[in-house]
Length: 254
Image (cartoon, rainbow, N blue to C red; front, side):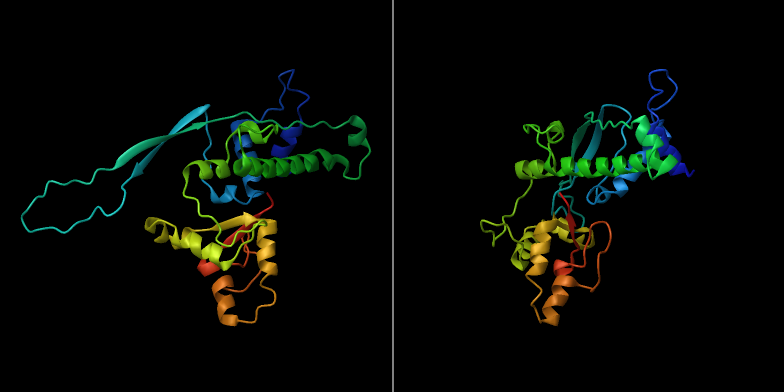
């Protein structure tokens, strides 16, 4: 059995926990399990993943602002110094769980045979990755949902503190358009526009599908080149061949 299979098998061997015989992942196994879940998601792979050994961790931030450089005069010290702004981000862990149970009958009488436990473990790991991405996006501590209430997600944090650009073509049914992408790009601070290759657009899969459907009757190769960039299929990691103004666009199932 491969190393990954050994790790996943360890996850399902939980009957020995009470007797101290195993069932809990050691740090090395836990890291591989986290890697597996990250690989099954779209946005998590684009994010910074920090593995914590304690319930709380602080991350230092530094900000220089903009236009710190100025005209100099020979042999004159103007006494102006650029002062970085330091701050901290506090990470606070929350406990989540995913339990499952297999009956003896299921283990003895199934098409997968001895591989059933490992197969179920992989399915559960994939499901956990999908559920976590749902939480990352839609988390809201005021929600009544057992998962979503665990923490505030990216959407809520963005609406409460980030710069939000409304879709200029938004109607009762939310739709993407080239104006949506153009307006979002123009609203970006210059310091991020200098890193254009690192920018990404992401949307729900249905929203992006509607945008693509609206382009099916186009017959303008030059205009399409602006939207699609290099023709091709999926680019992996949830990214598609859609590249509005050269910026990759991806979709999530959430």
